[in-house]
Length: 252
Image 1 (cartoon, rainbow, N blue to C red):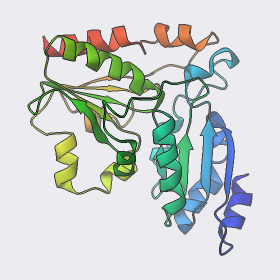
Image 2 (image 1 turned 90 degrees about the vertical axis):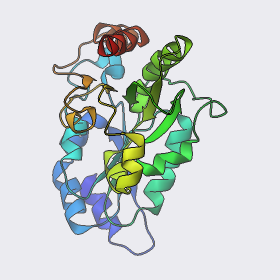
Image 3 (image 1 turned 135 degrees about the vertical axis):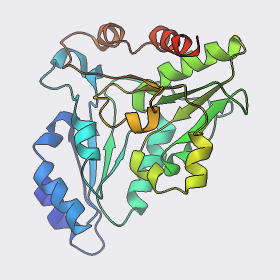
C-alpha cells in the first residue's frame, strides 16, 4: 500500500490516503520513510491503535509503533482523543504539504469531550494544548493522548472536586507541538511545574522529554494480551483510578 500511495502522491492534484491496522505500519516502514525523505504527502490512516484492539491479541496490538514512527524525520503522527480532534486531524493532514501524515485511531468507542467545558478541538493543530485547568498556578500537569485522554480527564475532574490545582493537557502530536514557538510550548508545559503525569497505551520511549525528571509515565513496557479491551485497560493501568492514584502519589 505504501508504495502505491507514494506513486500517487507524486501526481499533481492528488492527495492519496490509505488505511490499515496500526501494527502493520511495520510492514510499511520503507515506503513511509521514503515518503518522509522525499517530502511527499500521503495520508496514512492507521486504526486499532493500542491494546484496545482486545481479543485479537498481542500479535495485532501495537506497542512500539508510535515510538517507531515518531523516530522518522519529517513525518507527522497525530493520535486524536475524540471525534472532534479526529475531524481537526484530518484538516491538518489535508493542509500539510511537506511530508506524510499518519493518523492513529482507535478501534473502541471513546467519549466525545464536552467542548463547552473544555478547550476547542481546533487547538489540535498546535500539537498539544491546555484542555482544562482550575488554577493559573497548577501543582501538577496531566498529559494524555489518543483514547487515554478520557482517563486523564476523569482523574483531572476528581482533582478539581478536591480543589487541587491541576492542568489537563491533550497532546495528540509531538511533531505539531515542536513546530510551535518556545513561548507557546512553555505556556502548555510550564518548566517550573515539575510534577507531570503522562498517559499513553504504548511504549514510553521518548515521553521522558515531556514528563521531565520528576514526572511519571503510564505506558507499556510489555506486549499486550488477548482479552476484552476493558479488562486489558484495567490490567495495564489505563483507568481513571490508576491515573488518579499516580497523580496523588506525585503530589504527596
